[in-house]
Amino acid sequence: MEIKHENYGNKGVFIAIENDVKAGEITYSVAGENKIIADHTEVNENFKGRGVGKIILLEGLVKYARENNIKIIPLCPFVKATFAKMPELGDVLA
Image (tube, rainbow, N blue to C red; front, side, top):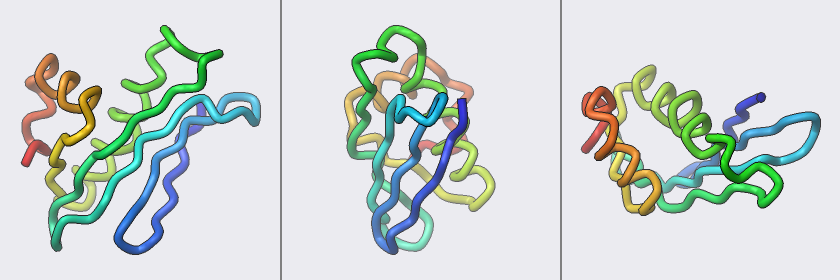
């Protein structure tokens, strides 16, 4: 599965793609110099139950936050729940 990042200035998205099909995405908004708000996660019906949301979160959003010294504000219920279950992600939690 490939993870792509698209940045639109004060907004962005991490997209999971498998065999040229969009499997899912996590969108975010910039909240200052070193914070982003993870505001929405969506997974394609054909990919549900395969951990796509977690893959995008870990391989996309969290990796990006760590590489850029950014903290994540988990507004999205999925992202918030995942952070609660995975204390090892606490270093990027705002």
